Each structure stands twice: as C-alpha cells, then as structure tokens.
Length: 459
Image (cartoon, rainbow, N blue to C red):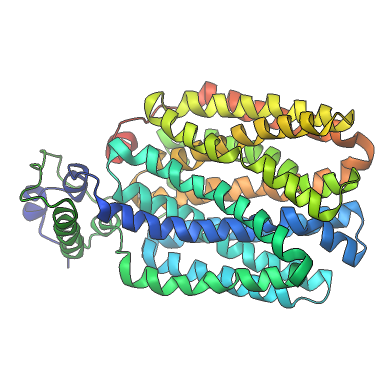
C-alpha cells in the first residue's frame, strides 16, 4: 500500500534523493550491466551489414529480396519497441528488460539454424522484436538512475556501445566468416542471452517508476539501498542534504499513449517521431548495405568486411565527441550538427562510390560519414526519454523508436529497389536528404533539456 496523503506530502521525493547523489562506482556498475546488454544487441543487429553479401550469394537473392531480408529485423523492432514501452510503464522496467534478452537470444539461435531465406527472415523478425524491446527500457533505466548533471553524458556513452558492438561484429565476421560461416556467427551471438540472470540479480527496479506507480514503500526501500551503496562506493560518511521538492502528486496512469499527444507533449512527440523516422531511414538505408555495395563494386567478401570495419572505427570518436558536446553545448544544437554532418558526408561518400574514386578517398569519406552518424545516435537516445514524465517515459521513447523502425524497415528495402535505377550516388543522396529533413525538424521544434532534472523538463 502507498503512504497517506499527509505522509506523501512530508516525505522527500525519490527524485530529490537521487539527484543529490554523487556519481560513484555503484551507479557506473549498474550502467555497465545495461550497456553490456546493449553491446550484444548491437552486435546481433550490426552483423547483417557484414554477412548480407554472403547470404545473398548463398541463396541467389535479387537486390530487392536482399533488401527485404535486411529489413526484416526492423519489422520486429517496430513492434518490440512500442510493446515494451507500454509494458515497462505499466509493469516496471526490470521484468520487461529481462524478457527482451530472452527474445533476442532465441532469435539469434534460430537464425543460425535457418535452412532457407524465408525461415531466416522470420527469425530475424523475432530477433528484432527482442532488440526493439530493450532499447527504450535501457534508456529509461539509465535516465532514471543517473543525476541530471551527468545524464546526457551517460546516455550518450550508452549509445556509444552501439558503434563498439557494430565494430566488434565486423571483427567477428572478418575472422570467423571463412571458418564457421554466417550460421555459425548467429549461433555464437545467441550465447550472451544468459546475461539475463546477471540483470535479475544486480539491477534494481527504477525507484522513480515505483514512486510514480504508487508503490512508495518499495520506492523508499530501494532508494535507501541505493543511497547506502553510493556511500559505500564513494567511501562517504554523509550524503549531501536533500533539497526541498514539491509534493509527489500521482496522476492517472491510464491512456499513456494518449498523453503523448496531449498539451506540450504533442509538439515534442511530432518532433521526435519525425526525427527518428528520417534519421533511421537514412542511417539504415545506407549502413546495412555498406558491405554488400563494396562487394558489388568488385571487392571480395573478406575485404568488404575489413573496409567496412575501417570506416566504422570513426564511430568511436564520433560518439565520444557527441557525448561531450551534449553537456557542453546542449542536446538540440548537437543533434542538428550531427545530422547535417551526416548528410554532407553521406553525399560525398556516394559521389566517391559512383565515380569509382581511389580507395583512400572512399574510406576517407566513409570515416567522416560514420563519425557523424554514430554521433547522431548518441543524441537520439539521450534526447528521447528526457521529454516525457516518468509515467509515460518508456512509452514515449518506445513509440519514437518504433516509428523510427518504420524508417529502418523501409530504408534497406528502398535501397534494394532503387539501386539498379539510381546507382550508389543517387542512393546516398537520398540518405543525405533524409538527414536534412530530420535536422530542420529539430531546429524548428526541438526544446533544450541540458542540465535540467527529468521532473523539470516534464513540467
């Protein structure tokens, strides 16, 4: 049962207690667990970039069929992101986060056992469903345990595990594809699903969510455990005093989706959905095909994987720079910069590929493209969960991600259909235009959240 109205009014809020805590190894250890799950998800999704050409050759697929296969996991992500957001806001972050890992683990295992392209497509949908579930929940969990002064940086670093996983997938493919084939790679990537047991033991439920759900006793108990762990980790005798905060007012938890289109949130939702749709349309339409396009240009499977890994290395400084810029400059200008940088670099890469420029020029343009595109991801994932209140945070982030999956679902397929007509130059120009649309949407409709508590932003 919750506390009485008078007791609720007199007790300090969970948010006030969490926001005054210093960052210690305890919060960083929780972050590391969530980030590791994120890393393995990234490997499972990114591996298709490096093995798509081999699958295309084995099954004798046309360009359109290859694009459909590349898009299949994003269909699952579309449903997974929307479903998980609603479930996490209704039943809690932790249980849904655990279930997501089971889905993608089983999906990866069955992809490795697929004997035809139709079954492979079906299991990629299941794999995508699990990955789509995890992303909005991981974002909400990190946003709710890290203080405002560090929140943007840590969410951006979380997204930095995306390029790391992508690069690790490329390295794995480079060394193992000739030995175990693409099926063996999928089987190997299913093993990290056992990570769910670590999460069950060490990651607590979000105390912010518990308080918002009216479970104040549980919220206070977990927050007290949180405070004690921070004191031990930081070797502190006392914690900073709790600042005065407004009484915690519970609002209806029904119709969480409807709230996304009510009052101030309607403008934010329109901005986020447009941003995610066009950003992911451009990103996945181009990145998923990078390896296959290099093979089409005459490079062997092993060399195309290696060159794609080289290009992707720029994603590491890209997300680090973006993580720093988020707190130094702000979410909105950083987002616009990364999107416009992605547009310019994608266009130049496409022109280099279309004119068969020297390999050094092609890789140079690719490095610039991946620098900005992975930096873009850091902003997307830092920005989305900050724009909604706790009761609908996972729902808002989940539906933004889900709408983005429409773009990521359409992008690879559109490339497959238009490639024979437009060529590589036209394909990358289309991706550049998508980034420009996303940038101007943020410029016109975005709000700044840097340095503000989640409760301040939501009100």
